[in-house]
Amino acid sequence: MTVNKEMLIGQLIYMDEGIAPLLMASGMHCIGCASSAGETLEEAAMVHGIDCDALVDMLNNYLALKA
Image 1 (tube, helix red, strand yellow):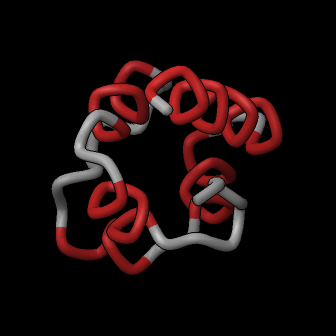
Image 2 (cartoon, rainbow, N blue to C red; image 1 turned 180 degrees about the vertical axis):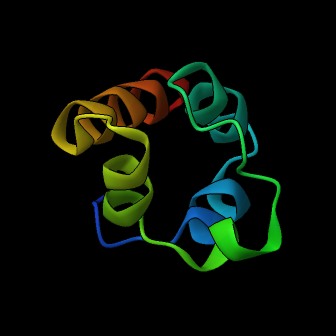
């Protein structure tokens, strides 16, 4: 599976628990809060001032390396 910016944060973490520390290292420190699980990656990136396309690329690279 590949990551896209419409995916929910909760989906991403369920897909691979290793994504959580990557999101936190990118500046999303509140991924454990209940509301973040229902946010899309794009929404969360916008709120935190993060380039969503770069984040998607980084997460997909991480998943590709694990495969």
